[in-house]
Amino acid sequence: MRTSHHIPNRFLGWVRTPLFIASLLLISAIVVVHTAWAVDSRKVEKMIEDSLTETEQALSAEKRKQLLESGKGVYQKFCVHCHGPKGQGDGNATPYLSPQPRNLRSGIFKFHSTQNNALPIDEDLIRTIRQGVPGTAMPPWGQVLNTQEIQAVVEYLKTFSGRFNQEIPDYRIRVGMELPHDPLSVRQGNELYRQMRCGRCHGPDGKQSGPLDASQDDIWGHTSYVYDLRRSGLYKAGASGRAIYQTLVAGMDGTPMTAYDYLTEDERWHLVHYLQSRFTSSPPTEKQRDPPLSSLKVSEPLTRDPFHPVWEKAHPKTVRLNPVQFRGHPIDRLQVQSVHNDRQIGFRLIWNDSQPDGARTTKSGYLDEAAIQFALRERSVSDSPFYGMGERKKPVNIWHWKADASQVISRNPGRTVSTHHEKLFVNPFSETPVEELNALGFGSLYVQSLQNQQLQGNGAWKDGQWTLVLIRDLATPSRQDINFKRGNRFLLAFAVWDGANKDKNANKVVSFWKTLILNHDASSP
Image 1 (cartoon, rainbow, N blue to C red):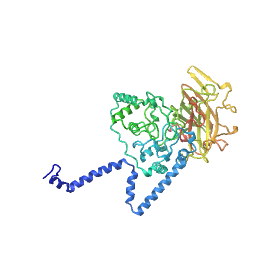
Image 2: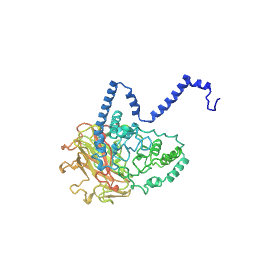
Image 3: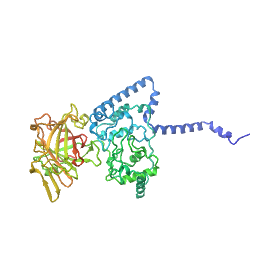
């Protein structure tokens, strides 16, 4: 007697055929491939290693040892100053930085394409190192390190946390098909923003802080800062639609930014479109290598006049600036020009500043300032000292300017206020707003003697903008000074202090090292 669960003989015969077995194998293979795609490549590598002979495994172990040694060398050269020798986020620069560097030993990372609280895959770590973290002192190392060096340092930093030996990264976040970016989607995103009470941290429209700003800490006990959502350049994990979508799903581990993985795919895209509709500028594109700055050879003498016609000949270069300590609206770019003749070299720096804070005009008691830092011995970024005030055995020479009493401030197009004749200077030992300094790392800054002060400079503020000129002889008798007659390639970095933000000392915005090349003619880019 047959029951309703009996399988017909013809079907049993088909099950026994090679075709059916092959079909099962194919389905299994698809599942395995999909799973392998979703996890870190180290799992696949482990399976391969287990199948190798002892000789092959020894060779593989030797290659890994060499890779870790290479990564350790990169780490100790470029990363140790902030993240510390053991990856605990306690480098020499750490007391001056905010947000503070990541404690790599915790194995908790903010930026990853995997699920909430999961380990990042290698590609996530590579991206963070390559592109840096906007709004912090973490520069884009992709402009300095090549692909092999970045991969090596990723392998090395994973040795700091035992999580990488005990876990494998979770599945990659699946980014759903993007909806049309139209006004309806933006309106729905705006409503979601309100319903989820995002404004309690980011403000009602994302442009200002909400009531919870600066009142929440991350799991390391540090203040968790809120950034202006309109500034696409400050989206730390990226401002593309895909990047924001992933951030909404994963959150930012260790911070109050939770995971919104309970939203539907459509709701996430609506929220992405609303945030992007608030952008005040296009998202920045990733840059591989910065072209060098050039100093144009001219025949005329150089003057401290910020608006001298000679500057019309020099090609301007925009330099990105990052804050050493948090601020919501930092000065984030600087326009740089350079010219030189047979005797002197000059630099003109231009940056936006809505409020001039000079010796006679400051309301906060803090002055606007700017500086150029030169590596005294190194000529290549790959051999550069730490860009934060140099390091031991790698000194830097600093040209520093303050908006002292001799600087010109134009209130409006019809009235200019100059304090040049008031004889009131911030530095009582000098009647100039500029001075030369040297440093060998944080806490080692010192001013050169009066007889070695060769720098000239002058600044002028007009229509929301500072224009500063710094001039010095190509070479001086002092060994503490950068000597431009020794070669035509030099390393320099920039810093700006905003008096309105109460910037002083280490609290400033800075650039990473740039390369300066002399002897460029007018036809050079």
